[in-house]
Image (cartoon, rainbow, N blue to C red; front, side, top):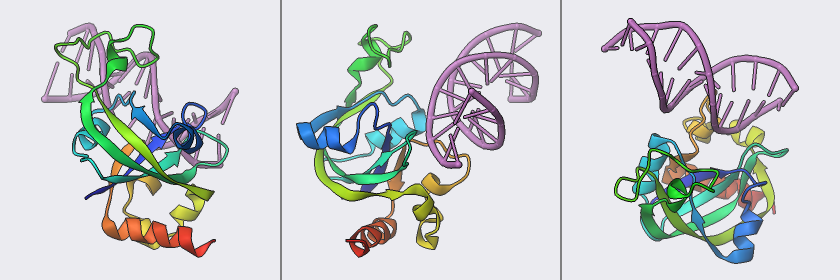
Length: 153
DNA sequence: GCCAACGTTGGC
DNA sequence: GCCAACGTTGGC
């Protein structure tokens, strides 16, 4: 079992949206590095659900992978915001996942607080200029964040 | 809304 | 293969 972190703009899709519907497709990723991480995910893997481009950027909860990577249908849909004219049914470079809600944190663990944690200094998330939207999380980092979360409630 | 940093595109 | 121009991300 592996750990990950995935970013989403809460205006588009938030941890509460996932909680409401229970399970959802994670799609629209259009970056090769992020896509490669998605393809490395296995059923049962856990991920931190991160809220980006919003008033309070930070980790908002936990989700679980319930279906491994498959071709992202939004790349083929001309109506979709994520439509890729270069993709075809035969050759679709983009991947989607099915994810399930696991936990919504009572309070978002804010980015500025995460940045203060020396245990998390290696995470792309806290590094200047990094825009990676899907990234691996080490067991140590996962434990450190879980501890931050537990310590506050 | 600004802008730094990054990824992608395309001419050469 | 280089690199300038452009588009996007995402914090602030």
